[in-house]
Amino acid sequence: MVTMGAPVIDMQNVDGLAEELVKACVEFGCFRVVNHGVPMELMAEMKVVVAELFNLPEEIKRQTATNNPEHGKGYIGCNPITPFLEGFSIDEIRSPNEFCDCLGASLHQREIISKYIKSICDLNKFLGQKLMEGCGLTGDLFDGWCCQLRLNKYHFCPESIGLNGTPTHTDPSFLTILQDDEDVNGLQVVDKVSGEFVPFDHVPGTLAINIGDIGKAWSNGRFCSVKHRVLCFEPKTRYSIALFVMGPNDKIVQAPSELVDSEHPRLYVPIDVEKFRHVRNTTGLRAGDALDLFSTT
Image (cartoon, rainbow, N blue to C red; front, side):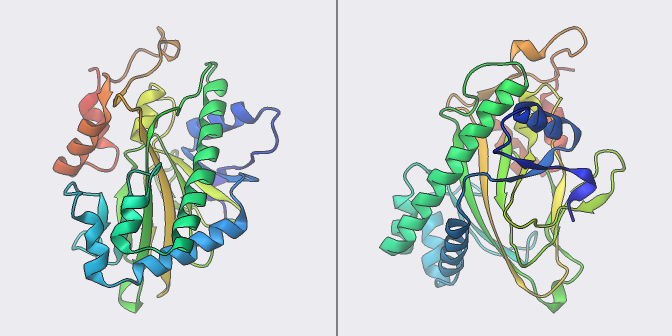
């Protein structure tokens, strides 16, 4: 089931693609893409590698967090807020060797990770170009932007049925490209109109895209930063792989002047991406409300 009419967009249909992508960002804040250029075989291989990494001993997994004391970087084990979820983050995606070295990854695992990163970043580059075009702008939106690859494992069990794998939140990114689990559903988003949770279930051959807080700020409020969660429906292990497109290297995000006019006054002050993430983490405002602290009013 595709949520609330959110579209599945064919990335090979070039005519009108830019406008279709922007419309989905405005109306739904999420959509799925097919013919996205990431090979199905590579996606399957990456899922296997992710499972292998999570099966490593705890002391080895925690080595990835040694040099990353900030919350959300390196390895994060299950905790009281997300008792069924553990995750890795690869922050230097252009050079994942340090992450792989910490885990003692094999040559095959390193090759798959590198190929996956390149393929998903190529898709992200194309999305950035089309979003600019659809907004009537020119240039490569995500050129040089910082990205984070997040690997997730949900330890769903009989006791977790009906409970959250992740609490309701928005993403701190501009957008997120998600390879969700083709075997285990549970991703839900908040319908922009009704305010109710609706399924955003896996569709074969697709990747899920959703807009985050930085995307809403950059678009001067036009794009919808969609609230979402993962709910446990069955006692099965669930994996997901997400590319978070965080922000430009100079760390400052603001709406282009072309998106500001008398009908659309500037809604947000220039946002330092690192400061914004820090505010979210220290205040616990992770459901879109942290962005209100950066309002021009």
